Length: 468
Ligand code: AMP
Ligand code: ZN
Image (tube, rainbow, N blue to C red; front, side):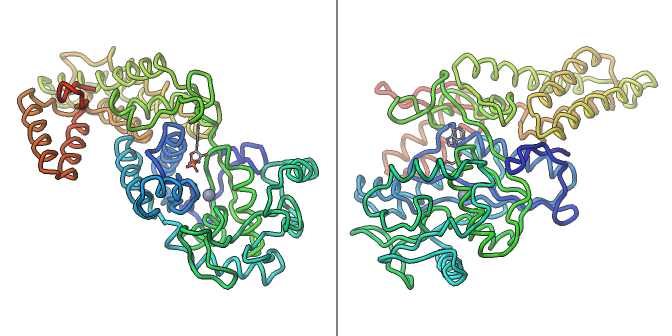
């Protein structure tokens, strides 16, 4: 299996630290809002990486954090007049719902930054003791000049960076020894959440979180560390500096980064007003379509989100779902149990599609080609399965399509259709729950309907619904 490693800028053979096991850390979202479709890309991509390792027989320990203390969360909390914790908790719950919709498996552990402060204080102290960090007026900085390999991940020219950063230095940061030094601990400002430490009452910097959580849940050396490409510098560069200085060992063997998701060929940003949340997409599409869309490109290629591409993804996914559905239909009326000799030969030929699928995935998780292999298999099933096919043959085709799609996290078996009356009844129950201010129940009903592919839209004229 080959994995592209940002550290060496090469595709390398994957060799686990421990035979049959993969220790993987994926930087998770900062929870101050619903996740957007850009955040969904690493979630879907690295969940697929995990699923493929599992398909190959590896045991994967998958850790992905939630950053639940941050300026953006604090600002949102001030805006709403609630605590930062309340904001974070709410959006973690919402994020988990979106993950379920996208069929992203829960991580083995989802640590929260605010629950790991002790470990962060310890690691910062260790860095100070070893001369890799220093304190100034309650703030602790990492001494980047002390870490000889600083810059090895991002392959950046540090002198250029230093002069760039120097002109950007903001007031309050001029106490740094070097423009590239970064914050490990900062004192609190009025009204901010804070924890005690030997340096000041305050909170940790963002980078130290991941170094500490990776160490606690996976160990000092891990196989894969992943995230979006914007995290290469400074976040991951800083994580390496912290972890390797503190632990005296290489941190992660393979660094994987997904390229960005753009929207209508432009960067997605709040100021352009072209932000799309996963929740918004779920009002229009089954989130399996979003997952299929994300996997239709290689994870290291930029991907453009557009209405046309989503429609194309919808039809692509339907091709697979329809093939599965017609195999089930044929199975319902098949007369012959066992395969004929001819069918056995045909079934043996499907190995070719499995090989194509695995070759694609072995080549740095080329999901676009893996999807193409599934399409080939679907075409083969559509042309070789017929009314006179045996149950065994139909079942083998069905199992294979479902299994390979499942490795990509795609659910391709149709949900049982709900009757209109059943849907209307559930909508009425939801309205009653809302009236009684039982929003948890109302949400649960909405989610249950969504699970069945029924999308609700609240309008001034009442609730409208449609099938995804
Ligand atoms: P954040 O909440 O900004 O820390 O982002 C969480 C994850 O989403 C990180 O791995 C980011 O690199 C990734 N990410 C954010 N925006 C995009 C985007 N437009 N395309 C792809 N990945 C993104
Ligand atoms: Zn991180």
